[in-house]
Length: 395
Image: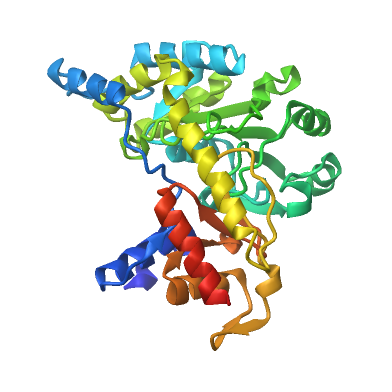
């Protein structure tokens, strides 16, 4: 009966990251020893002080529907966080709390985009940006980058990509999948181009902002000329190891925030009440309380880069944030290894899964067809074993 489904759902691709994770779970269920480096999820537990706040909220009977756009005191905490960490001034009417940053992104796309509008995606980009654009009945255009430019686009590339149909652009820094971070100067140079096109809006996805290794991230909305056109998206999933708590939020022009609240009110209503109360505690805590996770991620990054660097054919750069490496594997394309023909990055990822029992994600999913994404959100022993298996499979 699939022919009875809507064109909307039939046009929507399956998430490659979730598909690879599902494949890895399937093989594990069959008894295979799979090391999964495919999901973008910290392997730490949520810090105890946040869990304790959730328990307290349960005892205080926060069990009723929450306001569609979030509890007032959570919105106040978000405003303070934006000022403290990003030097951004938002009032309460500019904040909307959602069920994860993915819903925040989808809300914005659905309230801004019309059929035929164009979305610009600097590649590599998170897999759901393109799917969300499709769902909003817009078209999307990739702006390619390379490992030689640390996976960042130039102002000239942006200028060349803009057309009269361009309505929205997604920026993500620190970036998933590359870990790249745009500097303030780089963002200001891109903003200079966008100043000439006042009808283009900017989503600044900053979900990985606190997972950086000495190169602080800069908020696009902190550029004065961009503030009224930028929607800043964030959440607690990555930095606070709260992926399952499902809390994201935006800071946006009031008219966009109001529209997102209207949209959300007809789909999910307010986010989980207990998770919201815990998020207040998370955001009010000093960032130093989660530094131990960042330090561990940096140690793992350095180890993985060192180990992968010893395997001929992997071209690497040094990611400045997030918890991924994104090697260029084009040296393996067009080759046959262990009887397995490798024509694409997807083939290479499947080869590693079947021959090395290591799950990664093809770069095709991120608009970078010569790369794969490897998450180092795993234990040191797992990472060492995974790279050892990859090396043996390729030798």
